[in-house]
Image (cartoon, rainbow over all chains, first blue to last red; front, side, top):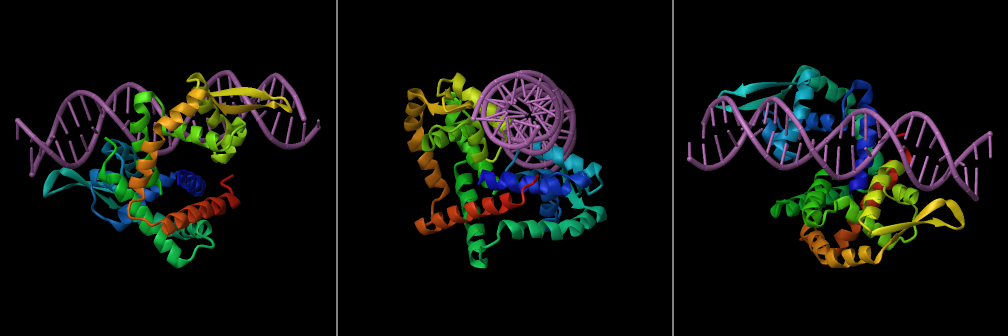
Length: 134
Length: 134
DNA sequence: CTGATATCAGGTGAACTGAAATCA
DNA sequence: CTGATTTCAGTTAACCTGATATCA
């Protein structure tokens, strides 16, 4: 599992190095695309990392003008995240290459098996979250 | 994939923190158990990392007297790795807990599906290694 | 000479803990 | 007061590149 993740990240890092983005930053953007108006803390929980870990990435993406943050008027503690037009443009510009990489990784694996893989990974994640590591 | 790996490592790190071992160090020991007499460079390739990255871990394990290194008489460049009695004892002492964690992670997933998962992960790794990220 | 192994030195990304401020 | 969010500061594990020495 780790080796697949490592290899995938190396490929993605190569892909995004020319535009100065890491694999994880790109991934965070795609999460924000699917789930708009998350706070940094929610995004961290979604990614199973601490709020502090997520903060660095958020700051970098904000400096690159790919996301913006604004206070939630209903809960003034929360800083809601949103993609900018720049962020959306960047995603659509690179989506094809990322899909192609996914296709390379899953070459020879049927649609049924891909759905099975997805289901099993989600189950593993849930099973490990039940008795959290401390 | 990354989240499952992260959660697994967090659990393993908690499990081995009392004896001052990281999850990856434990994993390296299990690899050496299954494949005795590997060199550090072979172990690195096996794990898809550079020889330099592996070196730190090897040094730590040697200092802990869990492995020993000795020159291969047939090829005096190679430093062959072997588990010590201490290393083997440590593995057998903790195997049960690690198997239990694996069981927790795979709870509700059938034997057939587990074999499928393994096969797919190996295929993904091979597919990503074909056009390496330089 | 080329290529593999090991090692030394230095650097980075991406996670962590701890502590403090803000606010529901 | 308790609990969630955000932020500041410092730390760590586990990677990396580059250079060098040994040896097949």
